[in-house]
Length: 121
Image (cartoon, rainbow, N blue to C red; front, side, top):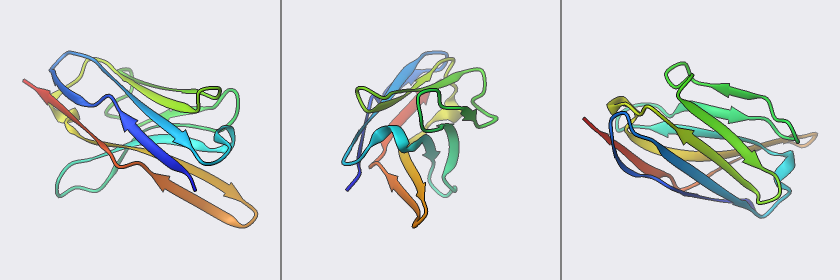
């Protein structure tokens, strides 16, 4: 069973930086598409960034974080990271790591428990 454990959240001032990490275990990491999503109370979960499976995974970002956040993966350490720069108060949310794989039997989707990021003004 896939397990995802996030770390690196915390409190930071606006304009600062944080780096989130997600440790993956329980399956073959390199075949999974990985992503970061975030959620605030009363709102739907929002895509932050994704990186496709493989050695050179294509990346995609939500409009609100383009140019500020960078997603990366380490297929040796089985981790995915999110470097967040120029943080804004509106980036405050719980950030979730996601792993997805699609096979001929269908898709499997896994989530971490989330890590809180709070950006103060």
